Amino acid sequence: MKQSDLQFILESGEGQFVEFKESPDKSLAKEITAFANASGGSIYAGITDTGVVKGVTTTNKLKSEIQDIARNCDPPVIITIEEKDNILAINVKEGTNKPYSCSSGFYMRMGANSQKMNRNEILALAVKSGRVRFDEQICDNFEWTDFDDEKLKYFLKLAKISYNLERDEVLKNLRVLNNDGFTNAGVLFFAKEPG
Image (cartoon, rainbow, N blue to C red; front, side, top):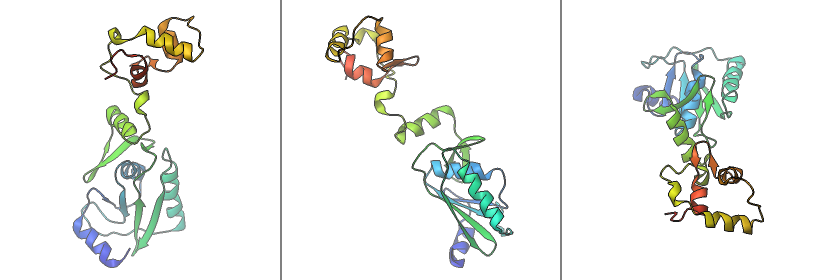
């Protein structure tokens, strides 16, 4: 980090990719996961929220504690630390294993703030990042009147699976039906009109 880069960051202030922290504290994990769940960013320790440079005493112990915070996220977040004039830049890349959480929950960087994510936002992020596959998702608009018993019987015959259980038990064993509903894979295999 060059002096000119630091000056530009101070003039620009906090935003989507920049967070100022007077000193590293418990909320650091929240900021790290928020950046990892978004597009990445940098946390500058030693600068107040208003952009005043206070500096931090940088020690190997402090750097190690910051690395430990990142490693204790779930899954662990890879960070790099740079130092310039008693300012620590904690650089967080966009995560490749989203969603990330810390002990206080799941966070997403939105503008100049790190917001706690609700259940639907976490699920949407998991789906968007491919953690929940299309075929495993519940088909919300499926109607059981569209279920084709003949397709199920034909499938079981081809797979050499006996049909000695109730239909719902068979579908649960095939993992196309669960307590939340019928999956997209189930619709593709067993619906009369899968469109």
